[in-house]
Length: 70
Image 1 (cartoon, rainbow, N blue to C red):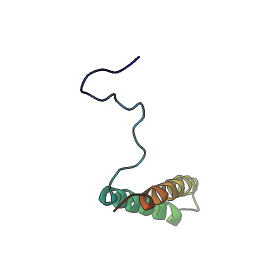
Image 2: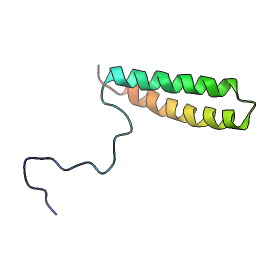
Image 3: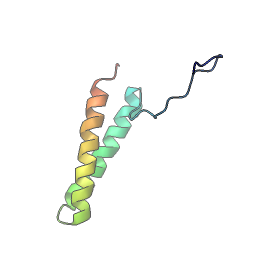
Image 4: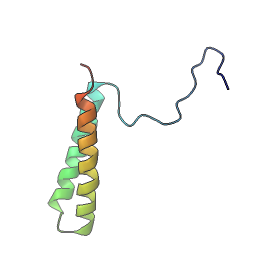
């Protein structure tokens, strides 16, 4: 099915990261804070889970941030 008209088709999935450095740095710093909070509670099960998930997000967002243009 072809799309016609002046409105572009909607993307099927939302992007997993923003397209500018200012918002990207805010996301990355928030994820780092959440990771730090989880790391302070690493002796509890929820701390391990929070640290693991947020560390993965930090790595992904750090890579995405480094690929953004200035």
